Image 1 (cartoon, rainbow, N blue to C red):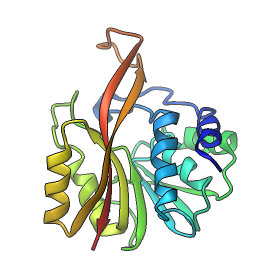
Image 2 (cartoon, helix red, strand yellow):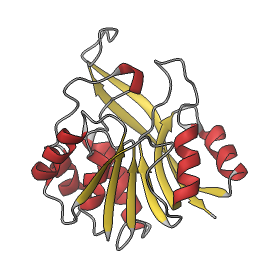
Image 3 (cartoon, rainbow, N blue to C red):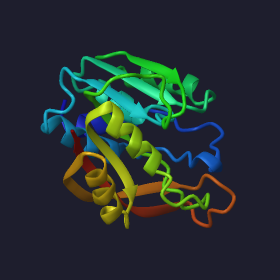
Length: 205
């Protein structure tokens, strides 16, 4: 499946019915998800692999990965209210590989593996005053994954590289992406905002 078709499929997915600011529940835009996942597929990180989406939300990254030939896909999400929407989105997107949806906290997932591909758009901590909130997600990726693909605050390049180096990982690729986010919370003062972000691929020992 090419990147354009993947983006069109992911555009069918619904967002959070009642997003929670404390969990930074912003949807991953379909164009960014398609870009990240197409790149992962080109690196050989999805086909015939176990793919885990940490903090899956309504399932965009998990479902996109499930369209690209993995052996199995697992979506881990702590907000149990989001999982029914993820299941509904699975029917809308119609991936070739079914997704197993698990209720669990991404920093303490109910999983045990060390050779998966992890995909994730973790919280940045920008609105919640928890800067570095993605640290726990990276720590989990270092335990579960042979390789991970993740999205971070635009200013996080040095942090991501340092964290990876300290935990047996190497950032092999990093590139900028733009997150187009609609109005979701009361403090938003515009209908749409473009948020610069960093996408990173990390190989873990």
